[in-house]
Length: 427
Image (cartoon, rainbow, N blue to C red; front, side, top):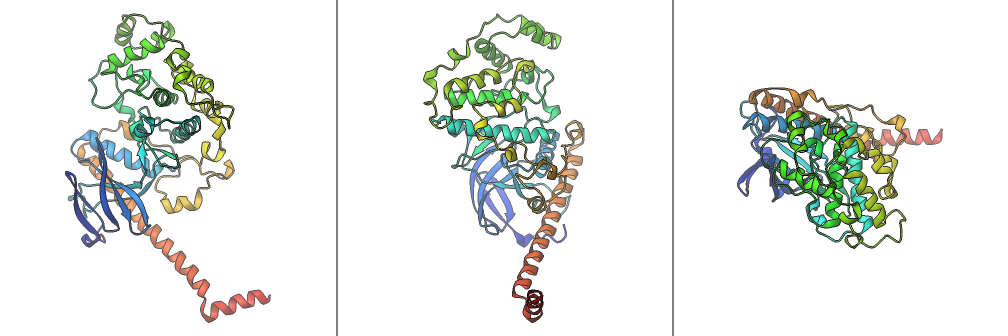
């Protein structure tokens, strides 16, 4: 880190926060803030593109924040898919572990989050294309051993051309929730019954969230807006009905006793929950994009019992979704080995090549989620990750420049270069 010069950085106040960032990033404008940090739009003078810069908010104030910051950074380095937000750069202005306190992540800049899009009148084409991209991104996370469990519209971003990206990586395995726990601190409207009830879960836990988002796109309002876990459960069973005894048997005794003692609800048929009047006109272009197909997909996703709920692969093959099916997007290369730089990825990852050319998966190491470190230990781990990233980016940048210089030399050649080229031609 000794080769980091303070002159590379400048400091600016953004809202209530102070950003000390690389000079290449100019025209800072605040665009959002959340539990994990403040985000600014900026212009990258090196790549001449607009970017989003997230300053992780006080990542070392406690163990939870520190673990979350470490997990987010490691996952952003690992995952590489067009429907998941990409890491363009990461840095810290501090020059030693002792001084280290800020982490900045540079990402692609998008136009809006899904909350804003849900409020629009979407036609079937746009709705099903957004859902298709969500499913592609989720499938890619699953291929890296990451089950999200906390997908929600505020963490899904969209560009004006209808391209979609998932912004975050959900709940760490140790950060689950149980039924009798705290009232709401964050939005849990989209969390599956098995997460709310503290049960085991599998990949299709994320399908429930997609179903809630789809239902909201059609209704224009949140499906299950519970004020706490218990109210959330009541909202679910009032609409979908009390689940079977077979489901109840899989609950922990205290939760089961509560759930079984609630009034029983029969729920409503899917066509009463989503009547024709709520849907846009049927598509004239695609036979699958009609109200009855959308309703059919919803009926398979919004299923309380995960054993009876559709899988991600099945959802991708559903007539309402598979009009967009592209093997290169659905089965995109598995996440690249840890530590590989963005520059390396660009040269090794082909989006639509045959599956035999895909690099082997490098699943996320879930032991991170279970590790108990002190704040200082997490700080040390994050610092090493950031330094490692900065070093790799520098060497990748140097290699890229060297390649360009070599190419320029070969093209301009000088006398020797020209002679060699002419000799080859003569042969």
